[in-house]
Length: 470
Image (cartoon, rainbow, N blue to C red; front, side):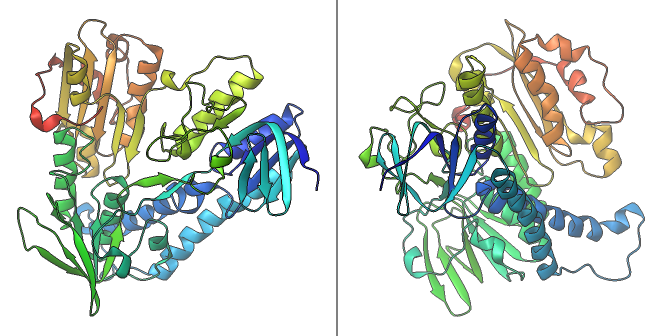
């Protein structure tokens, strides 16, 4: 059977693939886009959209339980209808998924191909019985949960980030192995749904890529909601027991055995690159399976690009979409956009959220730059006090010589939005004084950022405990 010829093949319909396919098609290219399962990728199906929809349900329950604090009277105790919460999640996620598929199928010059794509050669991709060929191929194949070699896990029922989304009941006691972003969001969510929750983390602190004050602040937020946190769990083993699971961990404090009804394993992600037939190509991967790309996201095979979670250059919806913007600009607009031009930025959606941009204190210390720091607890932020949400703090870091902002962390109400004030000034490469002299609206969280910049002090050298990466 002769190969079907296209100008471009896009494999995967995550955050960058569909936008790139439509953009290329609009430019007159004949495009094939391949999807083996659900349209929309991780974000739409098992990531941001469904999880943040459930986070919203959990927050509604949390606020309702605090109603009396605000002078609001309810008719009785607050409960959870998990079947309805799941149905709402499915509705929101499903609408987004259907929207992506309809968009692609209605795009002129774009052919949707369903099935699993595997390379036959550098320029040929097989999907079922069909062989597709193009001079330009774009990989947007995403990632999935990484399952660690935990003793007994293969014989023990457990959940991962995707399967836990199918629960329509509240577990009695959810044990979460993994104290980073995914694990902590589910931990607080299910605590608010009504589960007893225990987080088991191997490191000495939660999300240890962050500075210690951020880790401690997040732990305090969880402890205030009676989420149990077990750190220094160096030797983790699991087993099934009557009515649930047993997790054995050599922790510094507490019993070495934790019994729960359900187990969630949230220990990171891995790329979907092991079943693409890459061995039939010259496309190189690193030791973790991520596809190696240059600063413009081209692989070791000219004419093949890797975007999104499979390239190891971000792992977020917004970095995947930015990958699309970089590739499209360079191919269609004679641009010279590069991955190295973007500034690290992300959020952790516990409540209150963490908004992060740029370097950590530890990252700045490792760079040897002289720096200034401003820090303020949310108890001194009027907007937070008015809302009755004073957990957390704001922190900003400035290069003492260039006066440019190096990084910031806002752990508190509105932190995921307010951080963009800082991020935009960082992209402008403007001195911090531009933001310091700006007049912000009152009452907001953002209005305290100029105040924070007026209180800068020399950043002291980070100690051994702050050895996280920036």
